[in-house]
Length: 221
Image 1 (cartoon, rainbow, N blue to C red):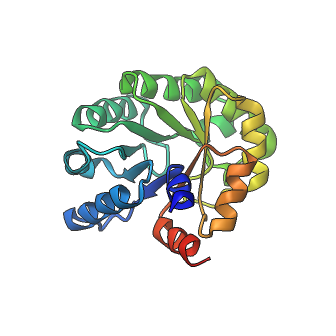
Image 2 (image 1 turned 90 degrees about the horizontal axis):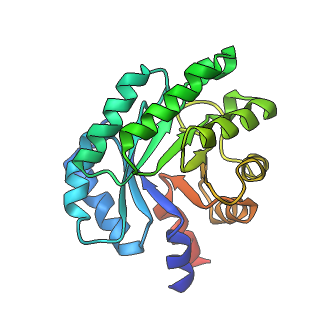
């Protein structure tokens, strides 16, 4: 059981199905407590319920912001972050303005992250850079700017666009941010071997909706 607990402590147990209802969130939170996942990662609508269910538990409530496109207005992301924290979110996964980065509009890109972090009021913000849409130079730039904007983590993917978490991207991201900022691998993580490879490459957190499948794999193998 020790190996399961150790692995689970890296995982944001994720449910971002837009049709999910209160019963699904209750089950998600129950699983997070049972296996010792780091957090449940959910849409803002579910924050209050999850916060109530996990009030006395170690698992945190993580909510997505500007999800999944990142094209939301900056002031909307800021308010969304504020309201999410008010409702009980303890971590926020925000999608950066990828279009601004690719267009070379660095001021807009940086301001987007900075004001979301400000809205979070000290709650850790993970900046999702959507690696599948960027070349290596853009990934490096996105990571550097995310750190400059105050993000506590950089994260690979939403899982709603192209690309997935790769060992190469995690190594690159970790090399850019150093050890002072977290690196979250997310997108297409469906096996224990893949998850361990990402951790070995430098990931300090994993986001996956296949958490239980991977846990069962560790139990059986």
